[in-house]
Amino acid sequence: MATDETTKPLWLQRLDEAQEEFPDPPPPGVGFGFILDSMIRDYLLCDEQDAAATFARRFDDLYATVYEPRFNGYNRRHKGWTGYLLAFYESWFSLTETMRYDDPTQDKVVQLFVELGKLPPHRAKIFVVS
Image 1 (cartoon, rainbow, N blue to C red):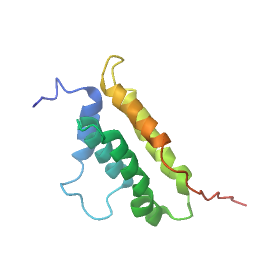
Image 2: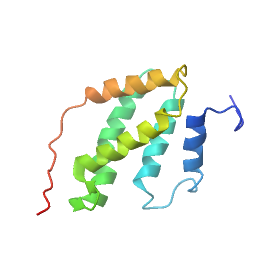
Image 3: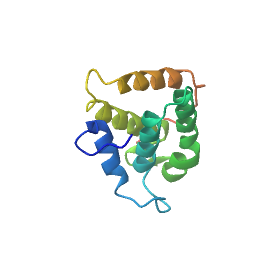
Image 4: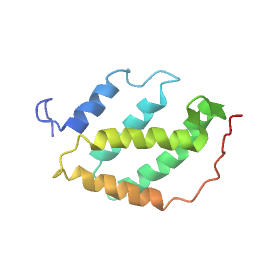
């Protein structure tokens, strides 16, 4: 279903604007935020039954494949799992505040957080600056 900018929900307009900053496919070394926003957009527009579980697994894998190699160890504000989860939650919270209270997409957000809670725990480094 094609929609124009006036009928797209605000959350989708914001994700589309973020995607327009880079060509498709994005160049090597593209920002983590772009990758995360792209995953979020794909998830929210997906109608597959297991989309939430698939996104949760992809997000879990993204730490080891993309985030950790770039920000391994203490790197200013990026601190291992803490920085990873901070970027994740900031993306979701800024996006969901643009969703209308009656938007059924909110149900998908809740489904995702339920699936994330089912993932196995990870050991996390704690960084102490002396």
